[in-house]
Length: 199
Image 1 (cartoon, rainbow, N blue to C red):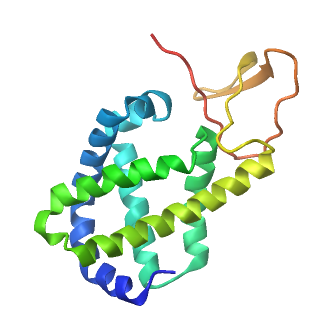
Image 2: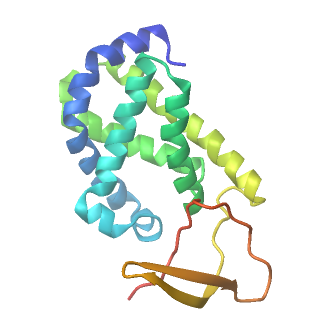
């Protein structure tokens, strides 16, 4: 739960940060990918990056989470963060990557908002970030444990053994392991990330 002091700072600054969040997230991704090109190459959907969908998703999640700290609603927080945690777990996100995000996100906030980022404002938004990050890390740890895998160890080499056209815009793929070993079980509706080496 957010501290009372940070709650009041977030309440006062949320409109300003919210108005600039699109610029902040765009700069954040540029900074992070310049410093860590392997993250863009190995983890992010480049189509969503190019179209701005990833930036919108991050901006929306941060703004929604911060808003829910002002009027706490654990059910809504769980709903928002559960979807993100499932996506992260499908990609093998690890706790150390949250520090990378923090570094570049806060550098972008300072660059965009300038002098408006006083030490008190920085501390309050830092508290929001780490509250959100720690909640996601805990959720993701649970998902890894439930799947019976080590944290971040989610990638398997598989082959498509069957392809069925279900409708004009829907295809079902049946996956098989290359070595014949059993693949992990799945739950209907869960995320499944596919990594493909492209030229």
